[in-house]
Image (tube, rainbow, N blue to C red):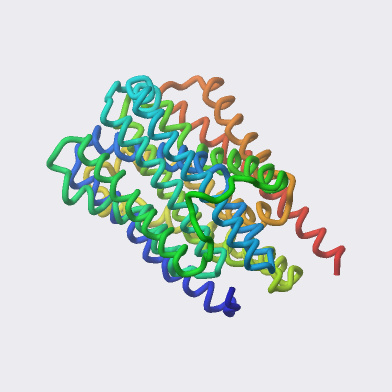
Length: 416
């Protein structure tokens, strides 16, 4: 692994973050412009459900790569670990596709509120492509090749979606989802193969062992559930509205605005967390950087909230000519929780890589449980009850994140 300066690593991630943030906003603008409200809601739900189940499908092994591959000083062991982890994800992806074919009608009804066989088949292919994409992205990250990691993340995050809307929006919804799944799969496999040929010296990918150390399996399993719940934070609400795709779409657009804070904070947090776990860098110095990033993130989030109240309404009207009023009603109730997103995601990767106990899993489980408490105890109905549940969920996430920040801060101070 080559040792690049933290400035170069962060600069690369920030540059791509700006590209991905603009691309995310552009993808929703294009979707709002070219699609009906119901189709927009269906496709956004398809993508969010894909990210949720694709994360589970990679078995937490993308995080295992970042922790154990990066920490190892033995090249042969790193290469062997890479092969075993990717073989397991490939097997899981094939199994998911077969399950989506065998139980297509039930799966489509459960996830999207309609018994569409083609939609279920496309979904099985899509989550397999995303799972492989997560492994490709983590492979490049583990070698500190952030440009390559960001390219595949950008492709699977929004660029392929934009291309599919522009090329296939005049056809059926099924055609858009099928092409989205196929292109995602090809991009992910291509990125993983490029990494394989550049860095990994294993004789045969398909004939290798499937044996893993128990510690790696345990770490991956807990991180798999943690990643699933992380995605679930932004899926559980729209899923409750799956029988009303229009409202689900408005909610997902609102969530994406909140996610911009996550998108902006993650590139720096990712680099620092990876460095804090690596054998090549000073742990104490990287921990100090994590704490500084968290503090700056909360301050920046507060400024962003103020800017929303000053300029949010005209900005939404320009961005979403067909959906601005509906999205604005939701955002007015959720925008105050942007600091919760910034604080949690500034700490998330550091916690994931530096503690064997799954603290993120505990926090996210409590947050999603809070969603259901808020939803079922609300006197409101439909999307209003879902937004109430979201407020409770994000409030719990903020509470836990503040506690985690305090714990890391005092531990750091005592270690000096």
